[in-house]
Length: 444
Ligand SMILES: [Zn+2]
Image 1 (tube, helix red, strand yellow):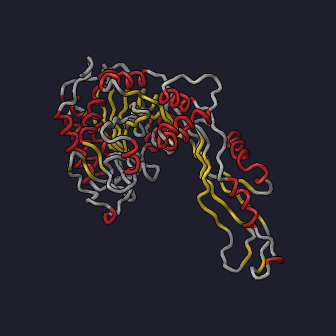
Image 2 (cartoon, helix red, strand yellow):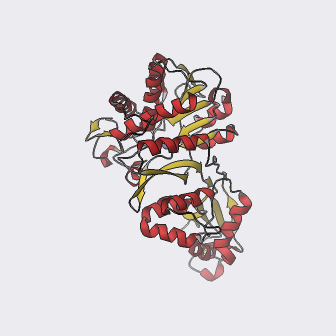
Image 3 (cartoon, protein in one colour):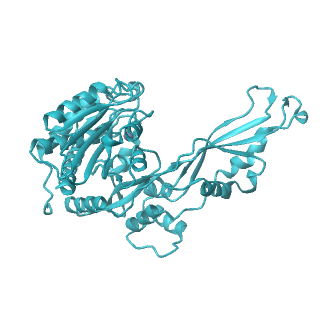
């Protein structure tokens, strides 16, 4: 049964999205080198035919970004954002051709189907359907398709810093959320409201070199890292982030009292849905520390005078250096003494508020199109282009949302940057119909 105002997915829109995704996948935009120009030209042509004003812009001629605009009246601006480059794929590891874009068993197959040509196809197909129908927004509808998201700075970063006039928006919908998952037999869809910051650091120990055949003559720096390395088997205490608390309350189906015993509540969720707890909830609720590299002597027979450990460190949105250092010290404790700690390009994560006109509208769409499902906020453990838009435009509300119901989060997530990447045709239609609905809802 469909609730009022939400129509079933029109089959033409579903077909158009599936067909467009196939074309996008067949344009190889593996980055590097990217070569996004031909694909961007194709999207610009299609959107222009539907009434959009299109502009290609960028720092390099072969790597332009596309900004397509419909409407110029008074009212808010909604931007449907996506990137059209992909990571590489090794054909020999896949069970089908990564660039076939074919429809098989109800799924469109190929590199980018999830990350994120599928969402781009749904956004563009929705925009084309709206434009062709004669609908015009009260404000502006933008479709922004960026280059170079997977590697460099030619995409959203370039647009937001070099052409803010072209991409300024009140509402931005990007990747990072929308897929469904279950807890205790109840269905949820994630709404990505923020991205964690990255505070990688080096831990460095100093000693004295010597011939490795006579250990008494040197002072081995590598051994001094051992206590710190062992301590990093633990993680810092949980942080009561607003997104993490809202996620726990929604998935457990009850309000959490003030000062909840977070460890016990997270353990309760882990008991019901271990993957949801470890993949979604826990990273939202703490600083994570994972040692990823170690380096000491360059020679087999020289006692190292310097030894280094690189630690990947992800922190909740808006957390700054003093708090991060405090969380690190809570794990390393006294083992930290005598070691140098050097932060490597620290990046503070950002977030949009949870309760906004856009989140309410998305919640209404979900309630009407799938009354069994609930919308829950998540923060991404990785980084996305949303960050650039929040940084450039103070008041912009930026979320990640591309609804997927047939292929749930736990099935889809391993396909991203993985093998046999594919997307459900029904989900592509669902996403396209959501984008047409949200544009009409926010822009009249
Ligand atoms: Zn992506």
